[in-house]
Amino acid sequence: MSMALGNVAALQFSASALFGIRSATSSFQQPMQTRINFSVMPLVMRARGNARTESAKIRNRRTQKKYNGTPKRPRLSVFCSGKQLYAMLVDDQNKNCLFYGSTLQKSVRQNSPCSTSVSAPQACVRKISQPATVNLENHI
Image (cartoon, rainbow, N blue to C red):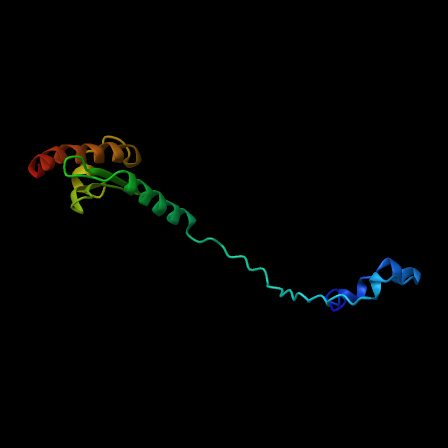
């Protein structure tokens, strides 16, 4: 390791020095070259934790910038976990939740003719869309 970091200037030879010929230009002293110290940093690899969660948050923020909910036309925010589905109508101007629905509500769970994974989105959307029209008429 110490051989590799040795003086680089000592390894430089001119053609005149190899053959024993001295010219007028080689008699002048050249300025000494500065040494460059390279510090060796250890390579540290870090795992990216919660990449899926973080990317979902970034996607959500990006959609919030594009689609701002108003009282007349609210934004529908949907979150699907492994077992449940949550949806809400959001008024971003007043920072208010106009309506909230999820598959945890008894009214959605009781009216399920098929399995929860199939009926949950359908029932939740029906549940949200019916009171939303009533709620929006009251806000206008």
